Image 1 (cartoon, rainbow, N blue to C red):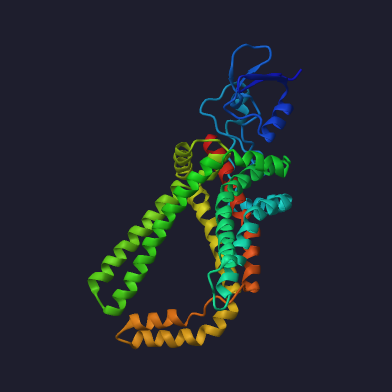
Image 2 (tube, rainbow, N blue to C red):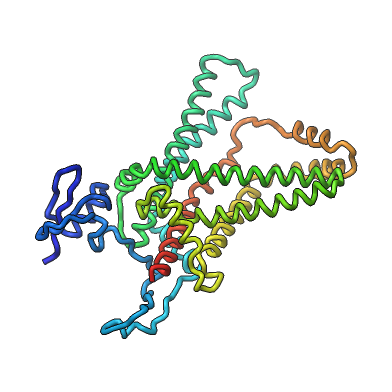
Length: 389
Protein backbone atom coordinates (compact mmCIF):
# COMPACT_ATOMS: atom_id res chain seq x y z
CA UNK A 1 0.00 0.00 0.00
CA UNK A 2 1.31 3.46 -0.91
CA UNK A 3 2.38 5.76 1.88
CA UNK A 4 -0.26 8.15 3.17
CA UNK A 5 0.66 11.64 4.33
CA UNK A 6 -0.85 14.33 6.54
CA UNK A 7 -0.22 17.97 5.55
CA UNK A 8 -0.47 20.87 8.01
CA UNK A 9 -1.58 24.14 6.37
CA UNK A 10 -2.30 27.20 8.55
CA UNK A 11 -2.82 25.04 11.61
CA UNK A 12 -5.26 22.62 9.93
CA UNK A 13 -4.46 19.03 8.99
CA UNK A 14 -5.33 17.67 5.54
CA UNK A 15 -5.22 14.02 4.53
CA UNK A 16 -4.35 11.21 4.63
CA UNK A 17 -3.36 11.59 0.99
CA UNK A 18 -1.14 9.54 -1.30
CA UNK A 19 1.67 10.94 -3.47
CA UNK A 20 -0.58 11.38 -6.54
CA UNK A 21 -3.03 13.50 -4.57
CA UNK A 22 -0.18 15.52 -3.06
CA UNK A 23 1.21 16.22 -6.53
CA UNK A 24 -2.20 17.53 -7.60
CA UNK A 25 -2.29 19.76 -4.50
CA UNK A 26 1.21 21.01 -5.33
CA UNK A 27 0.21 21.94 -8.88
CA UNK A 28 -2.83 23.79 -7.51
CA UNK A 29 -0.59 25.68 -5.09
CA UNK A 30 -2.18 24.16 -1.99
CA UNK A 31 1.06 22.53 -0.78
CA UNK A 32 4.39 24.32 -0.46
CA UNK A 33 7.78 22.82 0.45
CA UNK A 34 7.70 24.65 3.78
CA UNK A 35 4.39 23.10 4.93
CA UNK A 36 4.67 20.68 7.85
CA UNK A 37 4.02 17.06 6.88
CA UNK A 38 4.13 13.57 8.39
CA UNK A 39 3.27 10.05 7.42
CA UNK A 40 -0.17 8.99 8.53
CA UNK A 41 1.27 6.20 10.70
CA UNK A 42 4.13 8.27 12.20
CA UNK A 43 3.89 11.18 14.64
CA UNK A 44 7.19 12.75 13.54
CA UNK A 45 6.57 16.02 11.68
CA UNK A 46 8.89 17.04 8.85
CA UNK A 47 8.24 19.29 5.86
CA UNK A 48 6.54 18.63 2.54
CA UNK A 49 9.93 19.11 0.86
CA UNK A 50 11.04 15.85 2.56
CA UNK A 51 8.30 13.76 0.95
CA UNK A 52 10.05 11.57 -1.66
CA UNK A 53 9.04 12.39 -5.22
CA UNK A 54 6.93 15.45 -4.41
CA UNK A 55 9.22 18.48 -4.74
CA UNK A 56 12.41 16.87 -5.98
CA UNK A 57 13.20 18.10 -9.49
CA UNK A 58 13.19 15.31 -12.04
CA UNK A 59 15.99 15.29 -14.64
CA UNK A 60 15.06 16.34 -18.17
CA UNK A 61 14.65 13.64 -20.83
CA UNK A 62 18.08 14.45 -22.31
CA UNK A 63 19.65 13.23 -19.06
CA UNK A 64 18.03 9.83 -19.06
CA UNK A 65 20.61 7.26 -18.14
CA UNK A 66 22.96 9.64 -16.32
CA UNK A 67 24.57 7.89 -13.41
CA UNK A 68 26.49 9.57 -10.65
CA UNK A 69 29.93 8.28 -9.67
CA UNK A 70 30.26 7.05 -6.10
CA UNK A 71 33.21 7.66 -3.80
CA UNK A 72 32.67 4.39 -1.97
CA UNK A 73 30.99 1.41 -3.56
CA UNK A 74 29.47 -1.56 -1.78
CA UNK A 75 26.91 -4.22 -2.66
CA UNK A 76 24.61 -3.18 -5.48
CA UNK A 77 26.56 0.03 -6.06
CA UNK A 78 29.53 -1.96 -7.37
CA UNK A 79 27.68 -2.50 -10.65
CA UNK A 80 27.81 1.20 -11.43
CA UNK A 81 31.26 1.94 -10.09
CA UNK A 82 32.85 2.57 -13.44
CA UNK A 83 29.90 4.18 -15.21
CA UNK A 84 30.64 7.59 -16.65
CA UNK A 85 28.52 10.66 -16.10
CA UNK A 86 27.04 11.80 -19.42
CA UNK A 87 26.50 15.54 -19.76
CA UNK A 88 24.13 16.70 -22.52
CA UNK A 89 25.70 18.87 -25.20
CA UNK A 90 24.55 22.36 -26.10
CA UNK A 91 23.00 20.95 -29.27
CA UNK A 92 20.91 18.53 -27.16
CA UNK A 93 19.77 21.42 -24.96
CA UNK A 94 18.71 23.49 -27.97
CA UNK A 95 16.87 20.53 -29.50
CA UNK A 96 15.06 19.84 -26.25
CA UNK A 97 14.23 23.55 -25.95
CA UNK A 98 12.34 23.57 -29.25
CA UNK A 99 10.60 20.29 -28.40
CA UNK A 100 9.31 21.67 -25.10
CA UNK A 101 8.31 24.97 -26.71
CA UNK A 102 6.17 23.31 -29.37
CA UNK A 103 4.79 20.81 -26.84
CA UNK A 104 3.40 23.64 -24.74
CA UNK A 105 3.10 26.29 -27.46
CA UNK A 106 -0.38 27.53 -26.61
CA UNK A 107 0.42 27.82 -22.91
CA UNK A 108 3.64 29.70 -23.65
CA UNK A 109 1.63 31.90 -26.03
CA UNK A 110 -0.92 32.62 -23.31
CA UNK A 111 1.85 33.64 -20.90
CA UNK A 112 3.33 35.86 -23.61
CA UNK A 113 -0.03 37.54 -24.24
CA UNK A 114 -0.13 38.35 -20.55
CA UNK A 115 2.57 41.00 -21.12
CA UNK A 116 2.19 41.51 -24.86
CA UNK A 117 -1.41 42.80 -24.83
CA UNK A 118 -0.87 45.65 -22.32
CA UNK A 119 2.44 46.48 -24.01
CA UNK A 120 0.72 46.82 -27.40
CA UNK A 121 -2.03 48.95 -25.84
CA UNK A 122 0.63 51.24 -24.41
CA UNK A 123 2.40 51.51 -27.77
CA UNK A 124 -0.80 52.21 -29.73
CA UNK A 125 -2.00 54.89 -27.30
CA UNK A 126 1.44 56.49 -27.21
CA UNK A 127 1.58 56.52 -31.02
CA UNK A 128 -1.84 58.17 -31.13
CA UNK A 129 -0.58 61.01 -28.95
CA UNK A 130 2.69 61.51 -30.86
CA UNK A 131 1.07 61.40 -34.31
CA UNK A 132 -1.75 63.81 -33.48
CA UNK A 133 -1.25 67.14 -35.32
CA UNK A 134 -1.42 70.36 -33.29
CA UNK A 135 -1.52 68.45 -30.04
CA UNK A 136 -3.72 70.18 -27.48
CA UNK A 137 -3.85 69.26 -23.83
CA UNK A 138 -7.53 68.40 -23.40
CA UNK A 139 -9.46 65.76 -21.49
CA UNK A 140 -9.22 63.21 -24.32
CA UNK A 141 -5.47 63.65 -24.63
CA UNK A 142 -4.99 63.33 -20.89
CA UNK A 143 -7.10 60.16 -20.77
CA UNK A 144 -5.10 58.65 -23.64
CA UNK A 145 -1.81 59.52 -21.93
CA UNK A 146 -3.08 58.11 -18.61
CA UNK A 147 -4.17 54.90 -20.36
CA UNK A 148 -0.73 54.58 -21.99
CA UNK A 149 1.02 55.02 -18.65
CA UNK A 150 -1.31 52.56 -16.88
CA UNK A 151 -0.85 49.83 -19.50
CA UNK A 152 2.92 50.33 -19.39
CA UNK A 153 2.87 49.95 -15.58
CA UNK A 154 0.64 46.88 -15.96
CA UNK A 155 3.24 45.34 -18.28
CA UNK A 156 5.92 45.86 -15.63
CA UNK A 157 3.67 44.44 -12.89
CA UNK A 158 2.87 41.32 -14.92
CA UNK A 159 6.48 40.70 -15.95
CA UNK A 160 7.43 38.76 -12.74
CA UNK A 161 4.35 36.56 -13.21
CA UNK A 162 5.46 35.89 -16.79
CA UNK A 163 9.00 35.01 -15.66
CA UNK A 164 7.81 32.66 -12.92
CA UNK A 165 5.24 31.08 -15.24
CA UNK A 166 7.90 30.25 -17.85
CA UNK A 167 9.98 28.47 -15.18
CA UNK A 168 7.04 26.48 -13.80
CA UNK A 169 5.70 25.42 -17.21
CA UNK A 170 9.17 24.51 -18.53
CA UNK A 171 9.95 22.29 -15.54
CA UNK A 172 6.59 20.52 -15.72
CA UNK A 173 6.87 19.86 -19.46
CA UNK A 174 10.48 18.76 -19.12
CA UNK A 175 9.39 16.19 -16.54
CA UNK A 176 6.66 14.95 -18.91
CA UNK A 177 3.77 16.37 -16.89
CA UNK A 178 0.85 18.51 -18.00
CA UNK A 179 -0.33 21.54 -16.06
CA UNK A 180 -3.24 23.90 -16.64
CA UNK A 181 -2.73 27.58 -17.35
CA UNK A 182 -4.79 28.49 -14.28
CA UNK A 183 -2.52 26.42 -12.05
CA UNK A 184 0.57 28.05 -13.60
CA UNK A 185 -0.75 31.55 -12.92
CA UNK A 186 -1.95 30.60 -9.43
CA UNK A 187 1.50 29.30 -8.57
CA UNK A 188 3.40 32.09 -10.34
CA UNK A 189 1.57 34.89 -8.51
CA UNK A 190 2.85 33.56 -5.18
CA UNK A 191 6.43 34.23 -6.32
CA UNK A 192 5.67 37.80 -7.43
CA UNK A 193 7.35 39.72 -4.53
CA UNK A 194 10.56 37.70 -4.73
CA UNK A 195 10.83 37.66 -8.53
CA UNK A 196 9.90 41.36 -8.77
CA UNK A 197 12.60 42.35 -6.29
CA UNK A 198 15.22 40.25 -8.05
CA UNK A 199 14.15 41.65 -11.45
CA UNK A 200 14.66 45.20 -10.18
CA UNK A 201 18.08 44.32 -8.75
CA UNK A 202 19.39 42.30 -11.70
CA UNK A 203 18.07 44.56 -14.45
CA UNK A 204 19.21 47.70 -12.62
CA UNK A 205 22.78 46.38 -12.31
CA UNK A 206 22.84 45.33 -15.96
CA UNK A 207 21.48 48.77 -16.86
CA UNK A 208 24.25 50.52 -14.94
CA UNK A 209 26.92 48.33 -16.55
CA UNK A 210 25.43 48.98 -20.00
CA UNK A 211 25.35 52.72 -19.26
CA UNK A 212 29.02 52.54 -18.38
CA UNK A 213 29.67 50.83 -21.72
CA UNK A 214 27.82 53.56 -23.63
CA UNK A 215 29.81 56.24 -21.79
CA UNK A 216 33.05 54.45 -22.69
CA UNK A 217 32.06 54.31 -26.38
CA UNK A 218 31.25 58.04 -26.41
CA UNK A 219 34.56 58.77 -24.68
CA UNK A 220 36.48 56.70 -27.25
CA UNK A 221 34.76 58.46 -30.18
CA UNK A 222 35.52 61.85 -28.67
CA UNK A 223 39.11 60.86 -28.05
CA UNK A 224 39.48 59.56 -31.62
CA UNK A 225 38.28 62.89 -33.04
CA UNK A 226 40.36 65.04 -30.67
CA UNK A 227 43.43 62.82 -30.94
CA UNK A 228 44.04 62.70 -27.17
CA UNK A 229 46.26 59.67 -26.50
CA UNK A 230 45.70 59.78 -22.72
CA UNK A 231 41.91 59.79 -23.16
CA UNK A 232 42.10 56.87 -25.58
CA UNK A 233 44.19 54.78 -23.14
CA UNK A 234 41.91 55.70 -20.25
CA UNK A 235 38.82 54.78 -22.28
CA UNK A 236 40.35 51.42 -23.26
CA UNK A 237 41.06 50.72 -19.58
CA UNK A 238 37.45 51.51 -18.70
CA UNK A 239 36.28 49.25 -21.53
CA UNK A 240 38.31 46.33 -20.18
CA UNK A 241 36.92 46.96 -16.68
CA UNK A 242 33.36 47.17 -18.02
CA UNK A 243 33.72 43.86 -19.87
CA UNK A 244 35.15 42.18 -16.76
CA UNK A 245 32.36 43.60 -14.60
CA UNK A 246 29.67 42.45 -17.04
CA UNK A 247 31.14 38.93 -17.26
CA UNK A 248 31.38 38.55 -13.46
CA UNK A 249 27.81 39.67 -12.89
CA UNK A 250 26.56 37.54 -15.80
CA UNK A 251 28.08 34.43 -14.21
CA UNK A 252 26.67 35.26 -10.77
CA UNK A 253 23.05 35.66 -11.95
CA UNK A 254 22.87 32.91 -14.57
CA UNK A 255 20.27 30.84 -12.70
CA UNK A 256 18.59 33.28 -10.32
CA UNK A 257 15.17 32.73 -11.93
CA UNK A 258 15.40 28.95 -11.57
CA UNK A 259 16.51 29.01 -7.93
CA UNK A 260 13.96 31.69 -6.98
CA UNK A 261 11.03 29.79 -8.55
CA UNK A 262 11.91 26.13 -9.06
CA UNK A 263 13.86 25.79 -5.80
CA UNK A 264 11.65 28.27 -3.89
CA UNK A 265 14.80 29.93 -2.51
CA UNK A 266 14.84 33.37 -0.94
CA UNK A 267 16.29 36.26 -2.96
CA UNK A 268 19.67 36.13 -1.21
CA UNK A 269 19.85 32.34 -1.35
CA UNK A 270 18.85 32.34 -5.03
CA UNK A 271 21.68 34.71 -5.93
CA UNK A 272 24.18 32.75 -3.85
CA UNK A 273 23.13 29.39 -5.32
CA UNK A 274 23.13 30.86 -8.83
CA UNK A 275 26.71 32.06 -8.39
CA UNK A 276 27.86 28.66 -7.11
CA UNK A 277 26.15 26.72 -9.90
CA UNK A 278 27.36 29.16 -12.54
CA UNK A 279 30.94 28.59 -11.48
CA UNK A 280 30.60 24.80 -11.21
CA UNK A 281 31.61 22.13 -13.73
CA UNK A 282 35.36 22.66 -13.48
CA UNK A 283 35.82 18.91 -13.96
CA UNK A 284 34.18 19.18 -17.40
CA UNK A 285 35.69 20.35 -20.70
CA UNK A 286 35.36 24.12 -21.01
CA UNK A 287 32.60 23.96 -23.65
CA UNK A 288 30.43 21.81 -21.35
CA UNK A 289 30.63 24.07 -18.31
CA UNK A 290 27.44 25.95 -17.38
CA UNK A 291 28.91 29.41 -17.93
CA UNK A 292 30.16 28.69 -21.46
CA UNK A 293 27.00 26.91 -22.54
CA UNK A 294 24.98 29.82 -21.14
CA UNK A 295 27.19 32.22 -23.08
CA UNK A 296 26.58 30.23 -26.28
CA UNK A 297 22.80 30.25 -25.71
CA UNK A 298 22.74 34.00 -25.00
CA UNK A 299 24.98 34.71 -28.00
CA UNK A 300 22.67 32.78 -30.33
CA UNK A 301 19.72 34.70 -28.90
CA UNK A 302 21.38 38.06 -29.49
CA UNK A 303 22.32 37.07 -33.04
CA UNK A 304 18.64 36.31 -33.58
CA UNK A 305 17.71 39.70 -32.06
CA UNK A 306 20.11 41.51 -34.40
CA UNK A 307 18.71 39.68 -37.43
CA UNK A 308 15.13 40.57 -36.40
CA UNK A 309 16.08 44.22 -35.83
CA UNK A 310 17.79 44.43 -39.23
CA UNK A 311 14.79 42.86 -40.98
CA UNK A 312 12.33 45.08 -39.10
CA UNK A 313 14.24 48.26 -39.97
CA UNK A 314 15.48 47.20 -43.42
CA UNK A 315 13.35 49.67 -45.44
CA UNK A 316 14.49 52.52 -43.19
CA UNK A 317 18.13 51.41 -43.41
CA UNK A 318 18.02 51.22 -47.20
CA UNK A 319 16.41 54.66 -47.46
CA UNK A 320 18.79 56.28 -44.99
CA UNK A 321 22.06 54.62 -46.04
CA UNK A 322 23.17 57.42 -48.43
CA UNK A 323 22.45 60.00 -45.72
CA UNK A 324 24.50 57.97 -43.21
CA UNK A 325 27.46 57.85 -45.61
CA UNK A 326 27.23 61.62 -46.15
CA UNK A 327 27.19 62.36 -42.43
CA UNK A 328 30.08 59.94 -41.84
CA UNK A 329 32.26 61.72 -44.41
CA UNK A 330 31.38 65.08 -42.86
CA UNK A 331 32.15 63.78 -39.37
CA UNK A 332 35.61 62.59 -40.43
CA UNK A 333 36.50 65.86 -42.14
CA UNK A 334 34.97 68.48 -39.85
CA UNK A 335 36.61 70.28 -36.96
CA UNK A 336 33.29 70.52 -35.10
CA UNK A 337 31.92 66.95 -34.75
CA UNK A 338 29.33 68.05 -32.19
CA UNK A 339 27.56 70.19 -34.78
CA UNK A 340 27.38 67.25 -37.18
CA UNK A 341 25.97 65.00 -34.45
CA UNK A 342 23.31 67.60 -33.59
CA UNK A 343 22.41 67.83 -37.27
CA UNK A 344 22.08 64.05 -37.48
CA UNK A 345 19.78 63.95 -34.44
CA UNK A 346 17.65 66.79 -35.83
CA UNK A 347 17.24 64.96 -39.15
CA UNK A 348 15.76 61.84 -37.53
CA UNK A 349 12.06 61.76 -38.52
CA UNK A 350 9.56 61.94 -35.71
CA UNK A 351 7.15 59.12 -35.04
CA UNK A 352 4.19 59.50 -37.40
CA UNK A 353 2.15 56.60 -36.02
CA UNK A 354 2.42 52.84 -35.76
CA UNK A 355 4.76 51.10 -38.20
CA UNK A 356 2.95 47.78 -38.64
CA UNK A 357 5.90 46.18 -40.40
CA UNK A 358 8.14 46.78 -37.39
CA UNK A 359 5.28 45.93 -35.03
CA UNK A 360 4.86 42.52 -36.66
CA UNK A 361 8.51 41.65 -36.13
CA UNK A 362 8.29 42.90 -32.53
CA UNK A 363 5.29 40.62 -31.86
CA UNK A 364 7.13 37.66 -33.40
CA UNK A 365 10.08 38.36 -31.12
CA UNK A 366 7.84 38.34 -28.06
CA UNK A 367 6.17 35.09 -29.11
CA UNK A 368 9.46 33.20 -29.41
CA UNK A 369 11.06 34.84 -26.36
CA UNK A 370 10.08 31.91 -24.05
CA UNK A 371 12.69 29.83 -25.92
CA UNK A 372 15.43 31.62 -23.98
CA UNK A 373 13.76 30.86 -20.64
CA UNK A 374 13.21 27.21 -21.56
CA UNK A 375 16.84 26.79 -22.60
CA UNK A 376 18.06 28.13 -19.27
CA UNK A 377 15.70 25.84 -17.35
CA UNK A 378 17.08 22.81 -19.18
CA UNK A 379 20.66 24.03 -18.72
CA UNK A 380 19.93 24.55 -15.01
CA UNK A 381 18.54 21.02 -14.61
CA UNK A 382 21.46 19.50 -16.51
CA UNK A 383 24.08 21.50 -14.56
CA UNK A 384 22.43 20.82 -11.23
CA UNK A 385 22.14 17.12 -12.00
CA UNK A 386 25.84 16.88 -12.87
CA UNK A 387 26.86 18.83 -9.79
CA UNK A 388 24.81 16.65 -7.46
CA UNK A 389 26.20 13.50 -9.08
